[in-house]
Amino acid sequence: MMNNVSRLVFTALLFSTATFVQAAVNFSKNESYSQSQVSADIQGFGNEVIDQVGKSKYIKFDQQGTEYAFSIVRMGSNDVKYTGNPNDIKGIVFLLVRAYKDGFELPSQVSTFTPSNYNNAIKIVKMDRNDERPYEFDLGMDADKKLYIINSPTSVGQLQQVDEIKKDVPLTERQKKFIW
Image 1 (cartoon, rainbow, N blue to C red):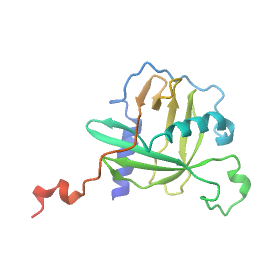
Image 2 (image 1 turned 30 degrees about the vertical axis):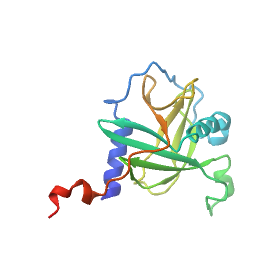
Image 3 (image 1 turned 180 degrees about the vertical axis):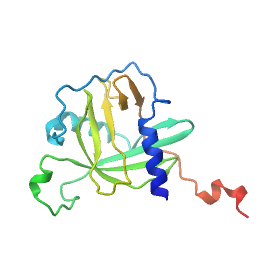
């Protein structure tokens, strides 16, 4: 049940344009984009974005009074166990993505980055086989090294880099007035 709720929340969150900021930043379409590209095809810029994300513990944004945050950490080559053909994962850089809603940690996901449909951006793509963890999004960075979640070429949500997020308040504390 909780996985379904978190899946719906993040799907609506990432694809909703209602509360995204119409920023001066413009991420144009990447004309050389191909679905078959992997991390190694944009490793220089991709590593630069992941390094920028790593300068703080979390990247976060607020939407209608709710705080959403991500922790994205590059995984080492020995951190991922793959039993298939090694050529299948050649050129892929693995990431561990953790998502939080008002401090509550949602299921973590093994991901990778690939070229994005947009210039100056990477796409975070899930690699877990569990389809109930859909945190896939385009992560852009401008010349000032500010990070954005990209909804469309002209609609983005600016991310704040922080080392602390809200603390999770247990359900029993949040709903104390309903507990007898």
